[in-house]
Structure formats: C-alpha cells, structure tokens
Image 1 (cartoon, one colour):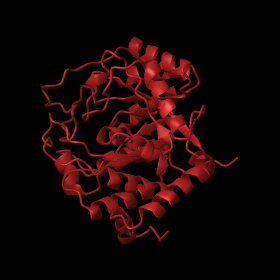
Image 2 (image 1 turned 135 degrees about the horizontal axis):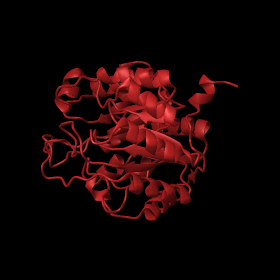
Image 3 (image 1 turned 90 degrees about the horizontal axis):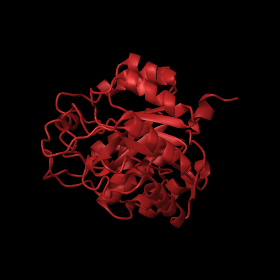
Image 4 (image 1 turned 90 degrees about the vertical axis):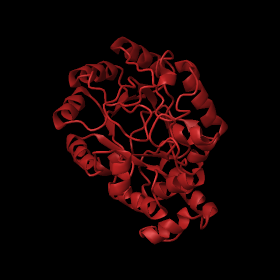
Length: 337
C-alpha cells in the first residue's frame, strides 16, 4: 500500500487506483484491531425539531412539510429498557438542535440510563462548555459532532451562517472533559471535489478521534439541495477504507445513509473497515418522521425487530455482534495500566 500521507496518493485511490488492494488492507487493519466483532449502538432519535437551517437536512427549521415530534422522557427510558433487554450495551441520543430540551433534562436522562451500567453517547450539536460538563458529570461517555466538510465555501453553502472551525472549539471542550470524541463528514456534498475529499480524509485523521462517522450525501426533496446528485457509493466505500487505514483504533459505523443510498451497502461498509452498526430504537409511532434524508428510517418497525434485523445482518455477513460496550481501543493507548 502506497504512503497515504499525501493528498495526491489518497486522491489516486479515491479515483479507483486499486480497490481490491485498498479494501483488503482496510479489512486487514479492522481485523487486526477489532477481530470479528461488530459493536452495536441503539440510536434514539428523540426529536425532529431543529433550530438550524442546514440546506441538506430534512429536519431544517424552514421545512414546513414535515410532521414534527418530541418524545417524552418516559418514552425514551422505555426504549432504553427494551434495547437493554435485547442485549444492547450502548445508547445514542440523537436529534435536531431543539431548544425545548434543557441541559438539566438531558443530565437527568443520562443519569437514569447510567443506572444500568451501559455507555451513553450524545449527538446534540454545538453546545456550551457548561452543558457538556453537566452531561459528563452525569455519566455521558461519548459525544459525536460531525464537521461534514472542511472546505469553507462548501460548508457555508451547506450550513449558511456557520463555519466548520466553530466545531473545533466543541471538540477541544470534549477532550478536556474526558469524553470519547467523535466527528465525521459527508461524501459528495454539492460542490465538493476529489481534492476536497482527500483534504477531508487527511484533516479528520489529524484529529486523532475515538469515533469517525462517514456517509454519502443524499438529496432530500424538502431542502434547497433537492435537485443535487447523491454522493457516490463506490467513492464512499473508498473513503471509509482510507479513513480506516489511517485511523486503525477509531470506532467507525457502517451508516444507515449507506443503505439508504444503495441496498446492501451497509454490509459492504463492514467489509471495508467499519466495525459498528447502529439500529434505530426510536419509538415506532415517530420513527419514520426522523427523516433527515430519504430512507433514513424506512419502516415503522419495533425495537425488537430493528435490533434482531441488525444482528442477523451482522451474522449473515460473517461477523459477530459484540456484547461489550465497545469503547475505542485508543482509550487503552491513552491510559495505559
């Protein structure tokens, strides 16, 4: 495998220089670090209200065609209990940036969930230090805040009024507070080139993250990007493979966006280096309404079915669903005994 430290070398693989060698190396790295295990995370999408107006997201505040929802604390905790009963050891709380929920509300929820000795990941957007500290003190283990794109003009086109550098402050706060830290980006945002993608791969790798989430852009019909071309699946798989090779110890999910873009691509994601699967355990009554992109939650299935379906997918692909909480191996390197 060529030296992947340069943008030109990365770009050559993105162009399809040698998919067989690239994918084999990414799979080898994953096996060396994680063996045959795939970590499972149950995602609760607790609200589809959002104050932001990202041009690619179906939850954007100016989308008047979406039916909005918020789940109650009781619904959320009931979903957690059921997920635990089916063997999940990590819960992810994800939603739009909804001012309805207070920092104290999330702290109470995290405290309740932690009574069952499982890991809690938060994905709540840009938040002040005091809130992040409150949640960490309550027991939150991980935090994911995706940057999406490192090119200034492309980012500002996708998220008007924002700059990607603003998220670095949050990443620094998370590290200081002792979270497992995650970020990521999209493949194929409108205007993005192969040079931009190679740059994103290098920049995300320099962040030395515990978690990295990557998926293709999927055009949503209720957004300003409705007529744009979706991110390419082959390019997404090459990106995942390159990021795995450069970040051997990071937990990397094979995302629902892959499957939404191309049936079967979620399994391909595991074959090129991903080691995490994330079934949605959002209550059935609202699951389909968390429509950040078409096909996100295509079925109003039960929590039991969603978990069993993912486990079967993992088994059929030749992997083992792990019964651990799935911490990043980087933690042992950062805190040797």
